[in-house]
Image (tube, rainbow, N blue to C red; front, side):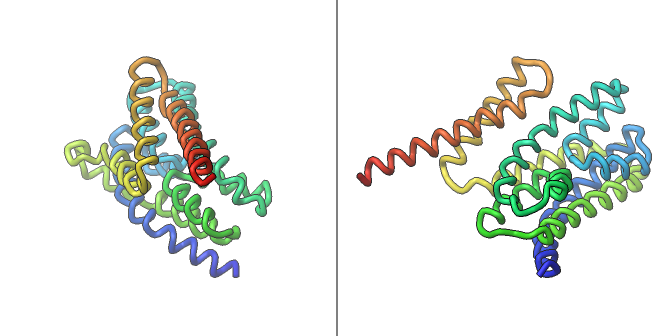
Length: 234
């Protein structure tokens, strides 16, 4: 049973693997151009394992930002993972707290999208999540290391648009999640809030604030639509 669940998780991770390889290689190339070594790229992908934070972290290292600034910025960017794991928690109560901590570390934007869509349909055991999350992490590790090796042979990676690889993947994932007008409305609200906060406030709080506010608006819309439906049926 556990083995079949692992295989199912592995198969579910394949689209993420294909998406991670160009993104990871792009990061590896840019990281080497920023002054990082292949070993540093490997350790960053192993311990940080967050594409957006790694891209920004590599840029801040190149700009010789302070250690505290890099850590704080990374924390703020990754704080969205608190919301992701919190939304998954109700579907994973059958797993131990220690295992949940490990799985929480492995959650990324892409594996979260797959996980939340899967557990909403049926209950999954730890084998499924190990298959999904370990496969995705290994793909990220290998692709970033490969990119760092290739980076020595690419003098100007921005010339090929590699710096836009991560935003391009996020856009593709977002488009795939749009299934009805309500979701599109929440996305537009979230984008407008994020841009507005970024233009009028310092720091990187725009992402987490826009996420919380837009998610709250989405819940309120759901409640309003449910009450309206109940009133019409009555």
